[in-house]
Length: 556
Image (cartoon, rainbow, N blue to C red; front, side, top):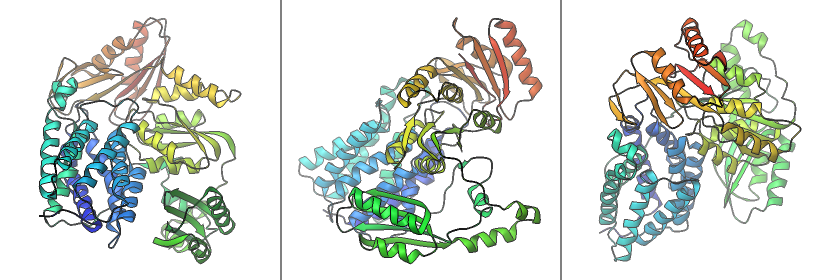
């Protein structure tokens, strides 16, 4: 009978859980309630946990505190989508409950699982039952019951928690009618179950390949150039990219943190110092990594050290570039300092150009088909040379990651405007008035986006019944703010009926953004039909270039 496990076993269990989730991610994606071609719960949860797994797999025999730090910080920064953010918060709460113990028994596990659920529920403004939260809560309740009844055998403990959590998962359709109507269980809850089942198999001794491969999704950009292209077009002022983690041997107060940052600024640039409890993560570009390391050693021991020669990388990149590219490889002027900056999440070259024209400083390429991570948000914030930065997520599945980034950001005030669609994001930035205070602007933008109705047209990837509509694979679907408004085999008809359902008497402007798969003349035909139906409204047609969605339409 096994009564306790140590950090080495917990590490194996975590990595096995991550691997099992990765293997099942496409199956979990298919559980998405809406039969759209971009159901991404499995992908988001996998990218979230793999961000932490990459750090964990690089460790050799970590102690519990260091392991917990890697799991917590890695998943927080890598969190994508609502499901990924909630998963990261579950890990954050769990690790808080176990990090001070070298050996974990059933009582400690029960306490930590309760802490995980408490932390995750607090992270969601309006927790909804029938989701991953419900499954996690059921598991924690079972753990508490078993521990309080004197169960000490971890094999029995884990097995019964998983069995009961599975039962809770099967009941999620009774708690969320939309799940019942679609004939599926909650996809986030199923993702959590795969993590637990993979971890349990490792506990039982199953051999698992713990190597973690790189997984990517999305990219952050100002134009269309990737980060490596931008790097290759710069002269390198400081040659060594230096990263490490300080495991503090005493409290790291605000003054020490500011002094340390000031020292790093005196020897380099691109400085990031993230302090969390007893660990500090450091990134700096410098010509003398030894100076940064010597200074850091005054605060504690170092781990995860990584030093890259950027000049060599720069030369290799330039060698591969054509002669024309070499001529263009000049250092760009840094953006001028502003009081207020804007970041928007957007997919489609046409929509991105619209946002740039409205003064957006940084665009994170992504959206419904590609949810950016909390780390993507933090990286974008660093690129905006402003004291206050607004983030426009433009998708309801990205808002939590943006809010998590706002809590983690340092030295800048981050304000998340909870835009759920691209048209809401456009409306928000249009209503920003530089002469007003931040409080007045924030209040105005939040109020104005409420007046925007949005519809989006895509296609169904499977047969289902939802919102009392029978949908066949291949149908076009018009999806409004509250659900599916229309469906059928004729794109023009489905789009027009969706618009009719969106319209109210107070609407004055209809904006049509057509996607990459729609010809301009086809979109023009839709515009003419809408104008004829609503002669008192201004109807604007613009190229959006967005993938997956044939049309994004707003009425305001």
